[in-house]
Amino acid sequence: MSELEKFLDRMEPEQAAVSLALAARGLFALLNEEQRREFIERMLGEPGEDKVVGMVHL
Image (cartoon, rainbow, N blue to C red; front, side, top):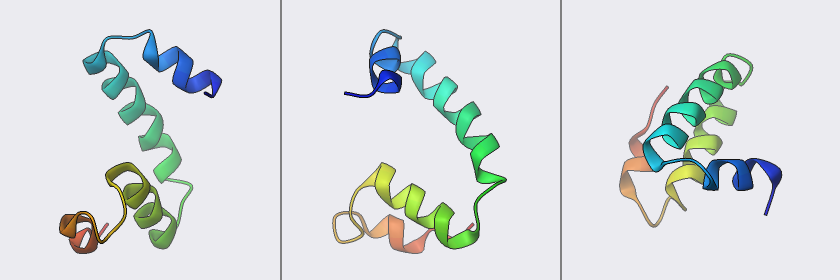
């Protein structure tokens, strides 16, 4: 388990989600469209598992 995962595991779920969202916002500015899509696919699962991932367009 990474240090980040350990840190987030000690937080309440809602606060962990807020913290991740704020961090992701900064990272998204550095990624191209394909990298953003891959990021979202990793969060939501494989494209075959969730059809919504295939419809995401940033």
